[in-house]
Image 1 (cartoon, rainbow, N blue to C red):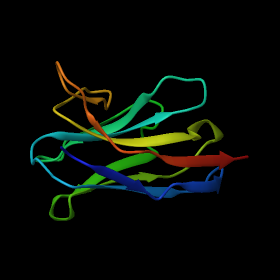
Image 2: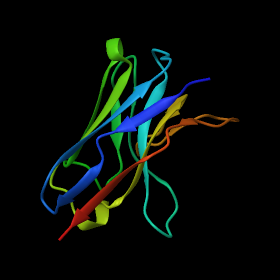
Image 3: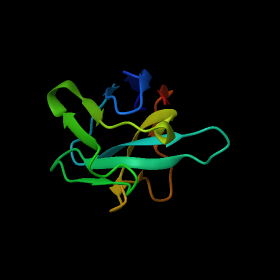
Image 4: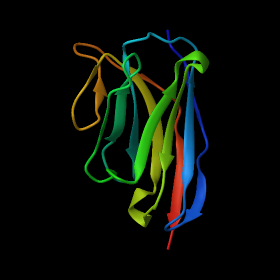
Length: 126
């Protein structure tokens, strides 16, 4: 069982920045970890993901060039640096741990389920 704890959400004006963190209770080097978000009345969508071993990362088109995902394997922590935030980035952001990563930044577990954090709210105002 892997427990994931997110932090770093908050409220910011459009154009501002936030950094999210996700600390894992256990870490499998070589698996994928990623960030998803869910806005009200919308489905949860992948934002960015990476393979923790090699650090290869992929992003959703909507955040490319603005968000950067990274990890510190020694600290078992995943980060999401979010710059040039837009009102439409407002959502509940979740950290996930899984097995495989798509080129659109979705970390998933074939035939199973990802581990999920509890979510951290990001609110961007105009």
